[in-house]
Length: 227
Figure 1 (cartoon, rainbow, N blue to C red):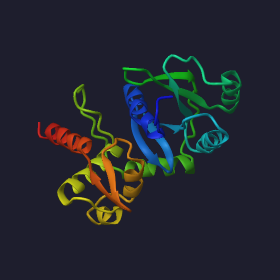
Figure 2 (figure 1 turned 135 degrees about the vertical axis):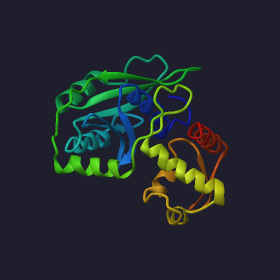
Figure 3 (figure 1 turned 180 degrees about the vertical axis):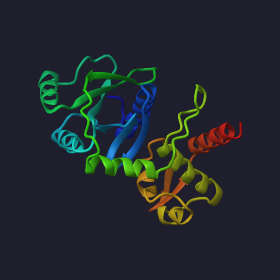
């Protein structure tokens, strides 16, 4: 695996993959890593650097709400399968869990492969599913820029991160508490800690600032919204 690989490094390629397949992608919904919705279907992806019992248990728990649940793990270069793949595949198949590989290739963008498909099983309007959907809807309307290949897809989660970025750009380093006082979402602390897009950096205990990557992302979206 590439040096220093983190779970958050898998988010961008997974978001791109799911968006390509027509899903609206959200992160950190009801503590799930990735939730994606399309035509009333709720798909949840739990992300880990390797298969272990914890991620299997998390996936099983998500089945109470999601119509489909996948586990996503990274793979190095052109290695075909992780260790004990036959056993893992058989277990996940029996439990009704899908598997996604995020392949990190030297000199190329990461690629997502569906290693084990999971057929959607409708949960209807179960209480657990409604909890997910309520939080997703509460984040605001998705604002994807249709047909654009130059501007990153705008998801509800990205919108929240951009709001935080805007506040940091205007006010300088701030704590999550002060950001929430400025109108940022209750999950501001989690967004800063997870730092999925790599926009933020901690300058002292509980205080964050916007880095250069974040400033460029903010400028790109401000330019796009002014068109």
